[in-house]
Amino acid sequence: MGAHRPAIGLTVGDPAGIGPEITVKCLREEGLHERVKPVVYADRAVLEQTVETLGLDIELNPVVDPDQGRYEPGCIDYIDCGVLKGPIAYGQISAEGGQAGYAYLERAIKDALTGSVVGLCTAPLNKESLQAAEVPFIDHTAVLKARAAHHDPMTLFMVRTLRIFFLTRHISFRQIPDAITREGILEALPFCDLYLRQLGIREPTVAVAALNPHGGEQGLFGTDEMDVIGPATKEAIDKGWRVRGPVPADSVFNQCYEGRYDGVLSLYHDQGHIAAKTLDFHGTVSLTMGLKFLRTSVDHGTAFDIAGQGVADARGMVEALKAAGQYAASVRDSIDLAPVV
Image (tube, rainbow, N blue to C red):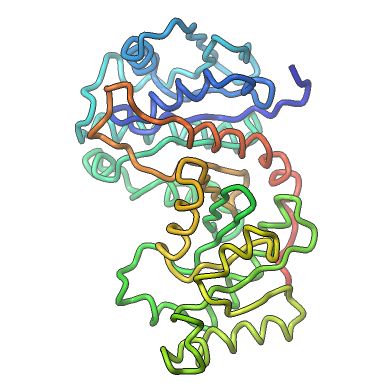
């Protein structure tokens, strides 16, 4: 096996969801241990329950520190976080599940900050279970921002050669136009450039997506491009930044995929999500950039409706772990790069 495999921490997320299942299935992927040294953060009871549910013959190897792992096929090296002492009911919102998932994440963050693991790959948490546990954070991103932010964190979707950043995220559709501002675009673009450079793209070009059909057609279908998006993009170009746009959203993502741009600044959640997930739903990986380490994750939830049935698809977890293995060291080694000005 490769001598320079990065140690990557995997958190199983809410133990009542599909996180433990896709983690265990992921670690059976052929050739994966040649790329990374994966250490799982969970409870022994949760992993035992998962292995039994799946009917697998796989060894569970408890370690106190990631350095102690064997990291070989047929063996799961894990850190027992000591929260749950027995099985948990699948598919149920509970304070126990929320507290356990949160504890796994906290321990993994601690090890990532000390360098015991190079980066993290996370399975889903459940927001309602976190609330039931009275955890003071709504989701993964909030925890990571509070514990490990280096810059203002940004989500980057990667699927094959398509890379997508998001200007706005979880807001209603009616709020989107008002949330798109010149200041917001000019604040986001330098970090899009920075985070692409952290992934090893030396001089990235970022395209800004348009909002309206055909980019507004000079005001026929809306003036957002003329009033806000276009002027902000022009100002960025005048500063010497490698920016293009606004480019109509029905073509910009394909153009990025084919190599015309290195990344796209999507203006709202579904604009970028639909493009990535249509291209390859299970191959879409979410990267959290702007932390003191790289975090990757699947882009789906806990799927309580199928938890414990053994039918969860682990392809997204496999791709997320591969991405962590490929880019975590690059992000760590370039942490002191500065945004363009």
